[in-house]
Image (cartoon, rainbow over all chains, first blue to last red; front, side, top):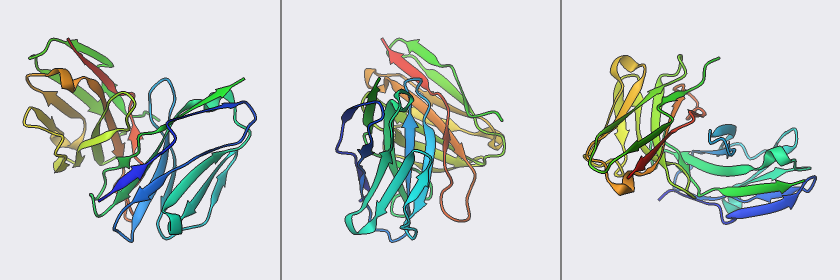
Length: 116
Length: 116
């Protein structure tokens, strides 16, 4: 069965601290896709990244970086030098053929609060 | 570039009434998805369309729920005989159909349904 676990319900940091959001997934498929979305207080889910199961290279985009490790079934997200605008709920999601051709299985999310 | 548009933003209704929500996807996107999100949870998949064809429905989608996408453009989600448990945020997303795995889904602001 497919499952995404985000064990951290809430994290609070002070501005400029680095923070890592954990994501652990389960699937029986060898081909699958992982996503991160940001949901700010305004409510709209914003796409951040898509990673397929064959690409284990870490990715960096500005202050954001992602660490994909198939050996531990994890796809963690790090924000470097956090800012108040990073405050949001962050969701990790999984898509694989085990479930469907297109729907996403979301974790419960991690609420990040960045204090000035 | 127009994003995914959902109407209304908020809907308050009495238990037992019927409600209908509308979603206008990004114009060139042929896939359209409906999700439901309750407080403190990640979005849960309800159904999705490829053009006008409804390709998958979740077990969450009871007989009281029906979705349509006539002509493969906008979509409507109707809930008949609403119940207290239907109170949630209903999210619509759209994407292109990818040849290399599922493409990122772009979400609307959602319709918040409150059942009195």
